[in-house]
Image 1 (cartoon, rainbow, N blue to C red):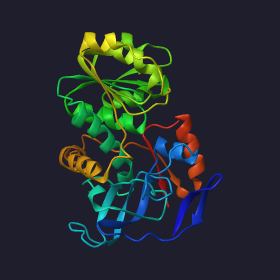
Image 2 (image 1 turned 135 degrees about the horizontal axis):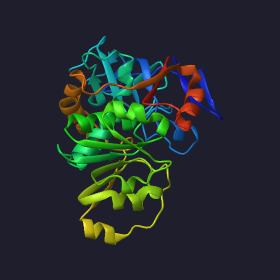
Image 3 (image 1 turned 180 degrees about the vertical axis):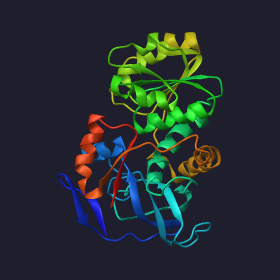
Length: 311
């Protein structure tokens, strides 16, 4: 098969075909979703976890080609999407069956590649950790990103009031998804909103203002560090507001934890997708051999929603 190999750049090269191990399925990839973790891996800053394929790609959709020993509930020909530890930028990928999701009704197979990583990230943070409830106010940073567009739809579907930071040019898209947009380039979000839950991809440079924007008993979920890793934390803010600050990653979690998240997404998020209350937001589709150019688009944040690669 062919895959994107990182070797002084990104190259569409012939590589050995994967084989499904016990408990795994082999997927013929129809599309792969792009994430900033792929950009970091391409730069040598985010190596794949032990046992994962060396190729980038944390989510894909496609058809099951084969199943390993011990796999039940899946069969060759099933249309699926999957959360991956790596390897999505390829024609085929083997993945633990516990990390596979059925194609949601009403969603095109190629578009389903836009769902697994964002759905698992958003659900695990907003529901599993932050315990988001109907009637609460949510602030989503990076509202036009893949994570952001999904989080806005999910929180709105739960009955929450949603604000989202985004460039002015993307405000119409953010508003159409259900959020009140805030221009982070010219406005201070901490003066615009009091939030029960904040979903943050920025990290250090936003920490002080995030704490200022939290309500009493608020929860700050940090899932990225585009604004840096290190800053000072004013404990007084936390004490005064009885606030919670949590930071999570997804890729490096043990399989058991990923499987639990995938189950939660299937039970609680997939019905919202199948009802049309959450839709994959796809900015563009790019041939997988042109992954390097697509990553440049991703890095520039010129897109809205997800960029998909097709082999």
